[in-house]
Length: 355
Image (cartoon, rainbow, N blue to C red; front, side, top):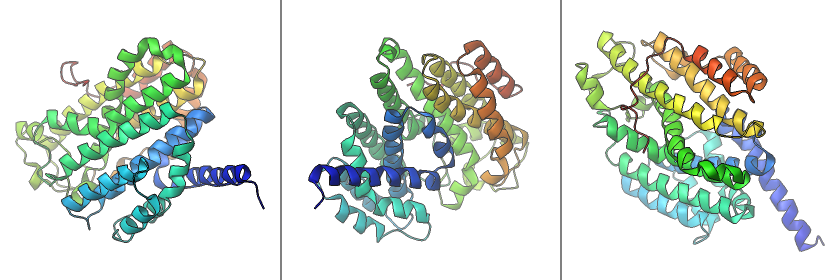
């Protein structure tokens, strides 16, 4: 008979191995960036991402009504906090998923109990940061999903709020995890928390712009109608491949806002001590991918799918090489950012909300 302590360790090893195996199946970007983190952070951030992905899977499932999504998001939080059995919850929700849900996402949901084994092995500070993030994200996503449609969000301010709920709050969580790991960062907590929200918004806006046609296929649009109205367009009437000059102008305006947020993301990263090269790489690679995606969008405004503006593998390799060489040097990183973002439109600082 295997001693209880050994059996627990074996089970946890299996749970950690599952995290490492499923991550590249559900996210190309985070499978690249998360392994750059120190092991203690790698495990916690991977776990947090996978739990956020479960929440996304529930909210994106077209077979569920808004009321059902609300019910299962609440149940998901109960499963994470141990108020209900995760196995029963996972089996019930997995049985309701349609073919629209990716097989890897279905597998992740079915193996939620395994992921939660890792969650419960994390330090209390890490667990608290993850649970708080999931609570804000789940409730915020539900509020926006209730009114989702091809008409988009009403205003740019609504886009700010949406980006906070799905990405800015993740930045806040990461900041808490980073400070717990590197206590000297506590001196910059207020500034980092503010910039983290902007960091999250820059990444999320980039994804929204890149994936807008795929989102429309699913009946959703997260673009702000007031921006497009200013340029004489109605979001409900947009058609892929039929964009005109007015669309290009509206897209450029949003690219300029995302660009400014990514500048804030760089400032966030430069607050991290140079000795924490892994944390810096985690941030820098995400920033680099986002900036190059914005460049692709700006140069090809008539794109009709995210695949057409995706960053190439060759460009990913250049990001990795250049940031590895300059990771510890703030001047070099600022120069790289300027070169990567040259010619992109840039919004005024009053345009991009940081809260």
